[in-house]
Amino acid sequence: QHTINKIAAGEVVERPASVVKELVENAIDAKASAITVEIKEGGISFIRITDNGMGINKKDISTAFLRHSTSKIKTIEDLFSVSSLGFRGEALASIASIGQVEVITKNREDLTGIRYIIEGGKETSKEEIGCPEGTTLIVRNLFFNTPARRKFLKTPKTEGGYVNDLMNRLALSNPHISFKFIYNNQVKLHTSGNNQVKDALYNVYGKEVSKNVIAVDYEDEDLTIHGFIGKPQISRGNRTYENFFINGRYIKSSLLQKALEEGYKTYLTMHKYPFCVLYYELDSEKIDVNVHPTKMEVRFHNNEDIFRITKKAVEQSLKSMDL
Ligand code: ADP
Ligand code: MG
Image (cartoon, rainbow, N blue to C red; front, side, top):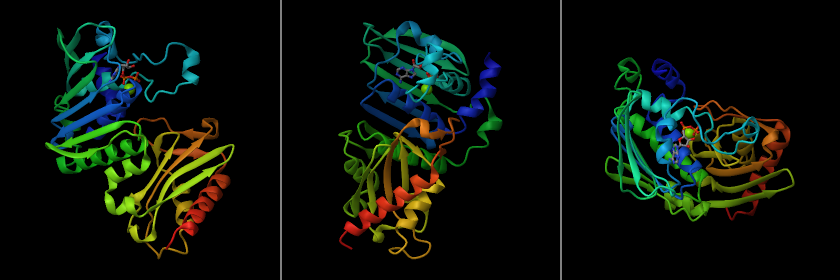
């Protein structure tokens, strides 16, 4: 069991950012409205995620760290209607197999909470403690028992940068959740969770960007697109300003990038890329999302429509702008 976890962990956990992603998704699934992420040394030596979600039941704590144990799917039917972010029951087992994990958690039904420690897949401590409702999960010394894997990590600065980018995307994809990100004792991001994209955008990108965007709103039966695009003057020399979210998830799509850029054709010179945060809502039966944990790719069943509508929505917003 232990060895299997270690091997399979490579799939879900390749770097601090993938650990943070899995743990934040668990907090979101637990209905947290506030999530704090703190890292040190790029997340390699220290990651702490605190949420105010439903917590883990005391009697379930050990099982939560077993491979393929998930509380999110109980029947085969559930598999086809899964709406939670995680459902494979792999993350906690994988993370505990290659790091030193400490959990403090309390479920509403329990009177006291529990502090649980598992290192390299081995339980070392389990004790009752008083704590607020919700979960704090600390991961120390990632890959401490797999030095070969640890060597594949980049510098703390680069790894921390990946976590920072991820936190920005998570904050933008969940404007209804308050996110706080602390990096080397500094607060890097703090969103209010008031469900206003414009406010999240201000927190992530700052005043200059948030002052220079215009709304996009497109709606028909099958598809809605809303969000913001930037005035041409806040464009960049690369595509890092292009953010697309589909049904609440950040995704990468060269189709959407092309459609956006075509929409800007008459406004931007060569090698300039626009700013956007665009949220798409569409029937999940009309897309294929690659559910591999480290990928964020999506395929649309009707490429031409999505392309045309995106381009048109962008053009219309640009036209309405006072340029
Ligand atoms: P999955 O998310 O695919 O179910 P995980 O290994 O990520 O699998 O988590 C295992 C289980 O542990 C979850 O199904 C959930 O019941 C519980 N859990 C994990 N993190 C949290 C959290 N932050 N709050 C409440 N429950 C959690
Ligand atoms: Mg999970």
